[in-house]
Amino acid sequence: MMRIVLFAFYPCVAAVLSGCAFYQVHTPLALDPVVLAEATAPERQPDLAAAAGRVAHPLVGTTRVTFDDGLSPDEAAIVAIVANPELRVLRHELGFARAQLIEAWTLPNPEAMAEFAFPVGAGTEDRVAEFSIGAEWEITSLVPLWANIAAARRHDAAVALQIAWQEWLVAQKARQQAYRVAAVRDQIAAVRAVEHGLQDALVSMKEAVAAGSRTDIDLATAEATWLRAYTARLDVEQELEAASLAFNHMLGAPTSSAVTVASEVSFPRVPSNLLVAVSSLIHGLETNRLDLQAMQMEFDSQDERYQAALLGQVPRTSVGFFGGRDDEKIGNIGLAVSMDIPLFDRNQAQVQREKTARAQLRDEYHARVGAARAELMRLASSVQALERNIGALQQTAATHQRLVNNYGLAFEKQAVDVFAFFESRIQAAEIQRDLHTSKADLAAALIDLETASGAMLCTSTTTMENQP
Image (cartoon, rainbow, N blue to C red; front, side, top):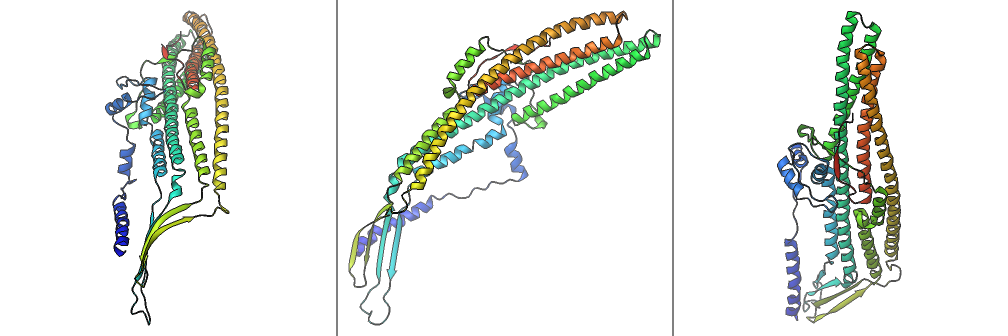
């Protein structure tokens, strides 16, 4: 009997020792400046271009990236997915989801016990040491096992979809910022042209005052108008610097190695059948938006958790074996079963918690779908308003440019008021700035429309040019 008991005990000891052999060890991870600089330094451009070329996002797609002449908006979107620092942090959520999946697969460890008692005192000369050894395992952990595994798998898929959705949002913001940089850069070209023209006119004005054909009041008017153009140019340059810094931040690039926007940027064109396209996007909203797909997957995961909680109502049951010997050298061996009596705790709190969480997810999903549909209609209206505004600004710019040309001819003949001539140049520059700003706003609105729908609405087909 003793041999049988020891033969059953040795595997338990071997299992404990083998389990210890698989323990993980601590891996150092420092936050010193050197390690931090290496962790946050962006990849070199060739390596970054190669990594961006391997991106196959379900919404953004694949784009070949080159840094030779700056990045186009579509290239910036791909680079942002690879290098954006916030996305690097977010992707660690996959590790937590994998940990939950491992936890779902993990069964409780069996428990081993051993007891020894030695006889002491008078009259124990014929007695021997008694002992008892055994092991038990909770079998009720098998009841909700597959429900927990299914919940963890669906949660893992939901986290992956949510990360892909955040990548889509960052990519769209990078596209918007690239268009903003291009628009402000074109504004600088326009205001610089006006400033140089007014500067030349100011030189001519000084010569005319010296010759006596113009007055000091005319000269003061010309100088004040030129200073307005000069201040406007400084404001636009400051705006370009701020837009460029925001653009590089989206790409995770430091100021020491700033990334520029391509010299020629094509702005998106509004579809001719915008409302029809938006209606189609609304109908396909629940299949296009990755965050809604993630919520659907998370709802299924929560439903599995609810099922696991229901299965968890089974009373906790453990089975095991024991063996030993008493002080009279009589051996024994047998089986043991222990079970909770579900008198008070029937897992009712966990069941109610998971049931409520499932209902909350359902209502949250319906609320987000409704909000997304309303947002699409609002953005479609905004796009149409911006398109009309750009058309009006283009007509105004063309009309005002003819006025500036006529004023210029009259100014050379000294047949027009100085203030009217210089003011017309300033107004022309302001109209150009409004036009470029409206085009950038239209591109941003179209991208917002794509972002809210979870699908590409239009492609970049028109190159932004200075209007006359």
